[in-house]
Length: 296
Image 1 (cartoon, rainbow, N blue to C red):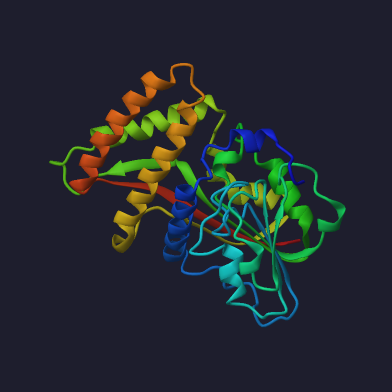
Image 2 (cartoon, rainbow, N blue to C red):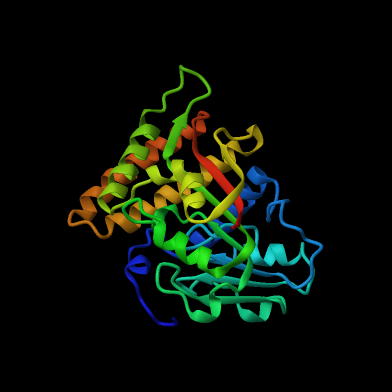
């Protein structure tokens, strides 16, 4: 797969810069605070020799996407510290641009370039005891994750565990600590991002139906949970994360626009006003989702 460029890779809306990579590490820390675990507690960690696949591993932080992921370190790097050394963990991503250098990887961790929307190599089929996906919502086009789901399930052994963590951008909203504090600019910024996302074919309704989609795909769901409100201790962190994400993605999107400079100026003004609102306590939140199950 090395060197192959696909439409998913070309259309990915994050810049894959060092700032984006740093944000993904930060975002992984938030994931850990939201979920409270790396791998779901239902997965037995006292079994030897399990094989784990992380789809969309990014900088090794975890899956923000066949695109970058989100963890303090690579999801697989962090998991490697929590499971027996006999486990083998493989992170897959469409781009190797944010992979840590192989010299810094544990002996039982491999990072591999692979497009999860393309046909999977035969040596990956039915090979994994655990398959993990995180934050791929912005690379699923036209609201149809069936190809990704099919490929992921094909990689999983019968009886294996599947964990899908994601955001639901359809729930993206600003909130204010008091009716006296305006969130007008924050609302407009989110509305602008959503409008450009639709132009790129991003639809997020499927995320509300994720448990049913996974069940239809052959998964026996163990847990399905939606985190619809931030803990107070991470309100500022999540808002900062989404502000950085909005800034990154909008500049990438606007660079593809015929009226890029005009739209950039408008966006910069709106972003500046939103920053002022956040200083007054305005926050941003997207619901975080996790669905866990086993392959029937």
